[in-house]
Every structure is written in structure tokens, then in C-alpha cells.
Length: 339
Image (cartoon, rainbow, N blue to C red; front, side, top):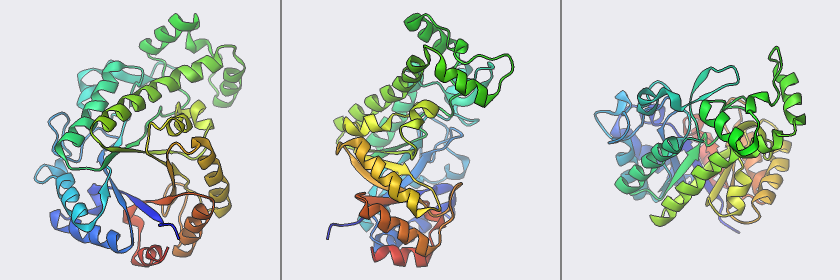
């Protein structure tokens, strides 16, 4: 029987907030349950980082000790791989990038800036890449992990950079796509999709996100590191809403692992979506299905978690990824150990 691969997303701010001595027992707990990869968040949506960076501001909670340094050491001792996880394009109040240049934020169709960085900006992509390269060079990690590798919604970005760039290529101001006198998301969405330039706009947005994935993929490969990504379960619609064309990344082998976030209480949805996810990448990368033990869309008992895991594996997923470590009980881990 083929090995069942397991990974888990982890938040240092909660999972080992008690200090360095709490990391080792956590790694041992995961190893006993047969986990392969731990994915600790090292850059949150607020822009602070959870490691001792020379580039970005360290979360105050971790100024006295480096959780990534300790985790890598303890994970290696327990036989686990480490893929540090960055929330790529969100840049909140902790971000020195946005403090330095607010014009790098995305802008909605009403002209309001939001706490995300614009993927179309080369400066933004260089900055995000520099954080990943810092982690790959300074820590003995096995790979790196992308999350929030997208736009935050269909309603961005309409900054001057994006409007002018698209206008130069197509002759159309993207604000004119779906423009209505009184903004209504459903009416505007319908108008968007009937505009002659709508398809070009969707592809134009997505190419900047993909450009970053290409750049990070090349950098990771050159260092002998793996690349994984948390991606939306509703592919290909996420190309429209978030500019995330992860099927293309997987098919082209830009990523080693796709972890679709199939957070649902419905095992039937896990079954159907797993089939779709595997078909999309055409064997170009590994697909481990993401399951939400406790998430914004799901709360799973131990029995439901194992049922979903078995279903995903039966449908061809090579592994599972659990969101998140803090939600896993001893009962969950004992059951997962039996898979």
C-alpha cells in the first residue's frame, strides 16, 4: 500500500506561544502521527514576520527568540520537512514596504486603497521574493510555501499602474469594464463578463500573479528547494475572482505541490473537488488535498476528518494537509496515525 502523506499548517503565534521548549513536543506529536511536512506561517497578512529578518519587522512576540530557527532544528530531529509559509500579497499595518511607498497598494474600482500589495508592480514582486530568498538562504528548510498568492477579490486592482498598463495593451481603461452608475456587485459582475475586453482583463490580472510564481519557482529550484502552494478549491473560477491560475502552475511544474483548500463539511464535495484538482495539473505536480478540521467553512469531528481524508485518497490525492495544527486533538492524531 502506498504511503499516505500528511502535512499541517501551523501558526507560531498560537501553536508554540509558550516559548522554545514547546516546539519539540509539537514536532514529536506530529511525527508519531506520521506527518511528513510542517508548514509554519512566517509572514502574516499584517506584514510582520515570524523569524529574525534583516528585511522586515519581526513580530514583537518573537523578538527574544527565533521560532523558525527552533522549529527547523526540532523538525529535522523528528524527521519532518519544513515549508515556511508566507501570506504573499497581503501587506497590513506591519509592512515596511507599504509604509515606505503607499502607492504600491491595490486599489478598488472606487479608488480606495486596500492593505494588499499590487502584483503588477515589479518592486512588490522583488520585495516578496527577497523574503523567500532570505529564508531559503538563512535556514535549513526543505522548501517554501505560498499562501494568499492572488488578489483579494475581483474588485482590484485599479491603481494607476494597472489602469495605464492595461490601457496601453488594449486601449481600454479597466474601469470601463462593468462600470455602472450605482455600484452593485451582481449587476457589475454581469456587465463585466459581457464586455468585449473582460477576458483580456481577467488574463492580464492573472499573469502578474503567475509571473511571481515563475520567479519564485526559478529561485527555489536554483537552491534545491521545493515549492508548495495553498490554492483555492474552486478552480478555475478563482482565475476570475482572485487571478489565481494554479492549474497552469501545476501543469507546467512550477510548483511541486498543490494543496487545494477544500474546507467543507461535505464529504461529497471533497470527492468531487479532488477529482477536479487532480485532473487540472495533469501529473505536473503532487496534489495533497487540504482539509479544514476547523476553518471558516468547516468544523469536523474526528470521524468526519478521517472520512474526508480516506475519500480524498481514494479519489487519487497523494496526501492530505490539515488546517490547522491548533485544532487537532489527541483523538484526531491517533486516528490519523492509522491512515
